[in-house]
Image (cartoon, rainbow, N blue to C red):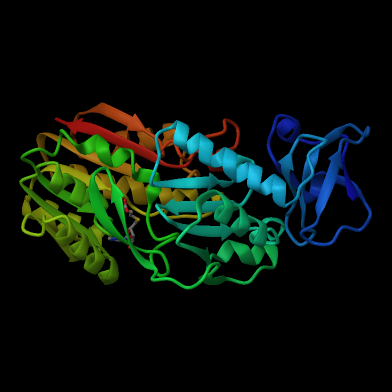
Length: 390
Ligand code: SAH
C-alpha cells in the first residue's frame, strides 16, 4: 500500500479528526498510488494517522476513511459501515425514509445515500468513493433487499475530481416515480428528475414543527418545490395555503401532492419568482398569518457569501412585511457558508428594516439522520427558524 507523509506543520484539523488532507499538507508520497487507491497516512515523524482514498487530481489529496490501523478497506468493511449507519438511523426512530449515509459525518467522505423506503439513491462525489460503488450496491442489497437503487451523480462537483456527471440505475431498472410517507402524509418523489436526490429529507423533522402555528391560518409558502411544507400546513388544519416556486415542474408536482393528500381545495400553488411576487404583495398590503421561506443556497463559495447574505436578508424582509401582527415567520437557510449566528443576525436585520419586533419560537438544524460533527463545517448546514412577528 502507498504511504502519504504529512508535513511537520499541518493544521491541527487533521489530528483533531477532520478527514480531509489538502495537497499543500503532504510532504511526500511513497509508492505512486493510482487515483482512487487506498493509502496509509503518517505524520512527518511516522506516526500513523489513518487510511483513506487518494486522488492526485483533487485539491483534497486524501480523504480519510478510518483511524484504525488494523482496518482493511474492502467489501466487508463497507458492509459493516452501512450496517452501522442503518443502526444509528434506527436508534433515532427512522424506519422508512432517511439519509442513510451523510458523507463526512458518517466517516464515508463524499458519499450520500438516501433511503426512500425500499428505494435507494446514491451520490459518490469523489473518485475514491466512486470506485467502491459495486461494494456499496452489494452492501445495500445484503442489508435491505431493495426494490431499486439509482445513482444521482449529475452533480458538477464531481468534475473537480475528474469524474463525469452521470445518472442511471445501479439495480434492475424500475419506475423512478415513487411515493413515500412522511409524518403521516404522502408525497410523490421523482428520483430520476427531481432536485438533488429527488426529495429534501433534511427538513422532515422541521416540517412537524409548524403543526400548531398553522391551525386556522392563512399560510404563504415560498420556494415550495414539491409542496412539502405547504401540504403539511394544509393537513395540520390551515385555512388556506398558497405555495410559490419558480419552477413550473415543481409546481405541477406540488399540485399532484396536494391531491394525493386530499387538500387540493385549500392548498394552491403558483409558478412565480418569489422575490418579485412578495415585493408586489407587500405594496398591495396583502397579509398572512404564517409565511414560510425555504430558499436555495444563493452561493456555493465563500468568496461570494455577500450574495447569500443579501439574498436571505431581502427575501426575509419581504416575507416579514406580509405577516399580520402576532403571526409567524418560518424561515430556513441550507448553506453551511452562512453559519447559525450569521443567519440569526440576518433575520434580525430584516426585522429591523421592516420595523417589526420578533421573538424566537424555535431554532433547529437539519433532521437528526444528518448528524453534525463539530469542527466539520460542511456537516452543519441547515438552519430552520420560527419567529413570532409582533
Ligand atoms: N421547501 C422545499 C425545498 C425548497 S428547495 C422542500 O422542503 O422540499 C428551493 C426551491 O426554490 C427550488 O424548488 C427552486 O425551484 C425554488 N426557487 C429558486 N429560486 C426561486 C425564486 N426566485 N422564486 C421562487 N422559487 C425559487
